[in-house]
Length: 250
Image 1 (cartoon, helix red, strand yellow):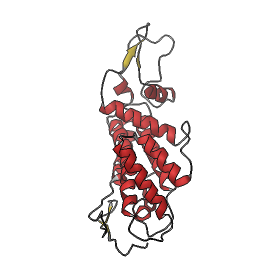
Image 2: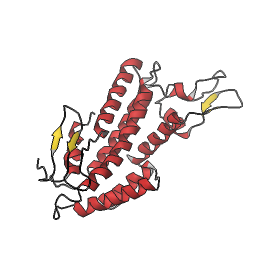
Image 3: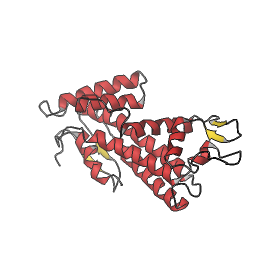
Image 4: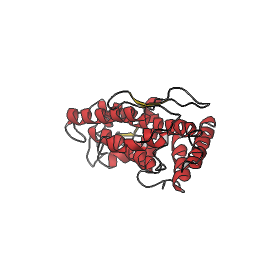
């Protein structure tokens, strides 16, 4: 592992973020936290599986934790990647991939200032790093986009249940209905002859199936983007981000 001459790399503990202290206009301490958030999501996923025992078994609030930390990890990754890319500007004038990272830093900073959405940042990062955006209706982007939508529905709570003419309760959220159809929620939808009533959308997603889906969605989009980064070991984006792919929990 090569450390740039005007940078100082410190690992503050097993599984923790690294620190780079650069002698540039952005000098100071930089701790990326995306990896820790992703590990916390994995731990919540594991606890959800232990609690419920099956994809749609006993309700487990750990599923909500898995959703929130999975989305938080994906958001932290794209924001911290932009910061790391900006800090690469003054490392080496001839490092391969430096121009690409400079473009990435500028684009992500501009998008942030314009209050651009997280999915837009991922599209732009993919375009700059790989020459094309993510396929919107395919893995890993589709599940990632649904994860962010579900996170937003959780942190901006409102009435998200609806009642059919037959008196059955079902989720109004398209994302939750999709998860329901995939058999990941605690209910699989209304069947013929089912009694009126039902379960709140919030209780429906308290399953290990949803917890596992949330974590997989974040892990897959993060891994896909990290694999696009330049190969040069002298760049902090490689040292602090892509080199951690092998440490991401399955």
